[in-house]
Image (cartoon, rainbow, N blue to C red; front, side):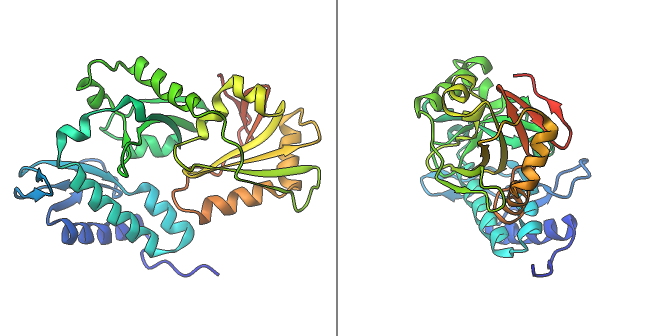
Length: 300
């Protein structure tokens, strides 16, 4: 049985994180003004300092930190250590961002697209103007620079300071970098425990985000069957169900997900693994995505 949560509400969780951030950074941490959203925090420098070879942030400088993903992970797993690990990552990121010029610089060789739940992008990206696309219902594509341990989400402010990178060119380069890595094969595949005609596959990000390879129509035709089920459960893993049987309709896809136990595996993975993205399952048929719980086709 999962342990009882020590911090049961977003407000309690945010208050705990604010205190630890203030202790760890020596900076002012408060909830973002006027948002009514306890999981959006402002981290503000109160004095100058040093950070390695770089000058520390000037008084009044700050950044917005979203706790949405880590709170979601904490609620699902009930593991406070995951939250503390994320907290340490925030501290490292804040120290890194004290070098504003380095943060805003984009190295196009390290750009990649990645998938997040649209609701998360909307909430976490308030006032940040992330550059996004929404090719799949309920999911958004964001664009990352993965040059260091502190991945950067590309936003309009960064593009404005990198005039040689228009939004269109930045996206084109990100997808080109993904194609340059080639198709990533599944790290694991096992027969369905309940339906032998089905195989469950796990595609794991080792060096770069790979989820968007499943948006590439040419790759789908070359590497995937005409119909399959897919779930983008967390940032490191994409789950796929392939079947020897034809999946001709959304209704058949729903039955397949249930009878094969794929829906249970997806739900468990989403709720237990760190950095969850979505527990939605999609039926992909001839390159078109249909979200099974809403049966809403995506235009791609």
